[in-house]
Image 1: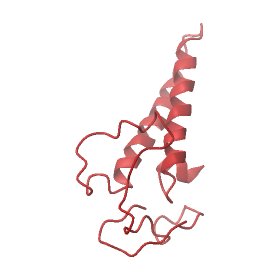
Image 2: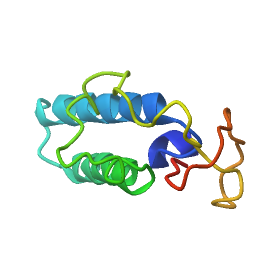
Image 3: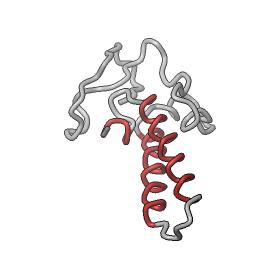
Length: 113
């Protein structure tokens, strides 16, 4: 769950799925008859944090992407996020992540982790 919340360890599909699920919870909360939106604001904060982590924990910008990824939060498949010969993650990053990298490609200066 931690890697999906922070888009770490190649969890980009899980990351997008998390955004989809949080978005649905937010919509459901706003449709209830209760006016206490504390939980809704917390969910929105979690959603925005996950989206921000996609851009800061990937090489989206380094790949020359200047627009937002319009598939993030709408589809589990978010498109190409790295070239086939690029390293997609490193296991030596955040100490709180308990997962190891799934794939290792030769390092090519731009890394998704």
